[in-house]
Length: 457
Image (cartoon, rainbow, N blue to C red; front, side, top):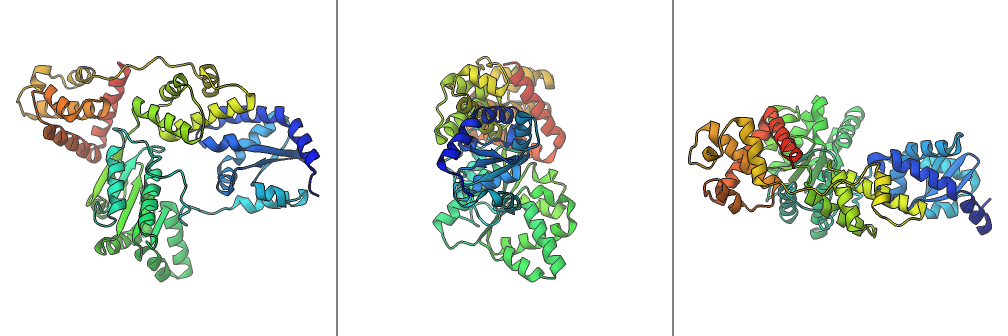
């Protein structure tokens, strides 16, 4: 039996305070699950022990069913003090489903499968919506070049960095651009887990020929989180031959990972091939880049954030873009359910913190103080013409960190170190990045130096 408009209005009125308590619980415990469009979720009714929530669209409904149902279920149970189930529906489903079919709708939307492999590209993942900074400029430029000349610019392209820094965004944006320029292009964009599952299914069904045709007759093969191949020896063997076939045919291969090629624990022959093309690292965004990310993400969501709130969010969340988006969503959700304007107090309440003091920009002197102490060298030696390794390596590290952590140009950095030109700074940057990829201990040293420099600011 479909509800009347009056019944819907009555249910919405009754549940308003309850919904506020649920959202406050979600804001407190949601973490990385929260997305900015959560502000568009609306309660339909709490009827018969089932909380019906309307999602803004089908993709959002699928996401909620897969990732957020437990979060909202626990919040609803905390708010009501009793066992409550949660069902996410689109507007169309809400209009079509009657009370007796809601339970079936929950079951039907639980197993949604993997939408990425089917090139269900998110409208949010474009080059225009990607915020660039020192932390990701190389990866962004490489993906742009690949999208303009797939198979010819950088092949393979290996993008690596910690979770939530934008690797999936760049892979999606690259495939979207290739498809826009060449609508007939054959593209496979999928997670490593999906690739492995498809291979296992092909082996079990005895249909390897179909599997190989699917992945070896494409123009672009983009695989996210390739490091997950490490525990699958047969899948590595299959991917090795797939890689060779595509590479020899000058078809584009794009891979992402949470670590560099040499740290993936994959077979050496695969690691060697990953290094044939471009390896681009994405680092954590600096404060200025985080501010730009918050501004852009809020503008995309039509959320008006005062400048002090923007700075507070950027100063409070240092890890990655995904958590910055989650923070924006938390602030917007709390503002909506409590009917309060967004200000510093509300943002602090939503994020469970206090406003951070303004952050002073890092200077080259800050870097020198930390590096000279760590390597027991003198500033005058770093600025000299000495090329012994005990001097050259700390000098290169200083140049690398100056490029990563300050706004100085290559010429300015080179000038600070004995009047060297910009090519010397670029060489130092490449040398340090190469050492980071090859030596985990050296990478840990760079990360510790970065933390020490930031701690002194």
